[in-house]
Length: 249
Image 1 (tube, rainbow, N blue to C red):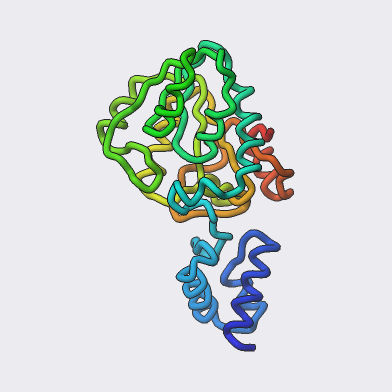
Image 2 (image 1 turned 90 degrees about the horizontal axis):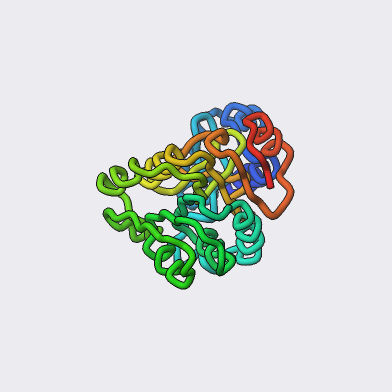
């Protein structure tokens, strides 16, 4: 079998089973694990999968810059945002992460819903200007241009003084074994810190994020109390959420 054919089969197995293991692939193809690892390295270099210890996971398509992501799964994000808005109660303190799904959430807010929004996203803060009932706290810091959010020591110090009711956390991957992931190491740390300041963390995941992973772990599925999706979960992921007591909406 040609290497190109073998790689296509590996991708097909990955699409069906949502993860592959080097040892199992070695036995399936009758090759050494070194040869399989070389295949996985080359596929990862092409952006076709995410390598992890012992094998690989489907790669998330949600790691593109913010402007590019605005046109991805628009209908899915809108449906998820509508469900997310229903969780916000008057008077609550709500942390809003950056990202296109959160931007859609802002667009779905009722004009008379009064709550306090805390965000490290300048674009989210600006979008909330049109909602006079919402008090907006913008957390400053060093701007991370890729996601248009602030990060750094000043940002982390500021959020340490906040006790929020909800945190709507953006992720690029949701996977049964890899948990919640994102494409930047520092951003993963910021998301963990924000989750620690909220009574409940809600993850909004459009279709391209499900059963996929990025390079940097935010945390296991237990980090969230609620996962909002607009399509039924594949059984393995659903079982993992139930095991970690994550409510799926």
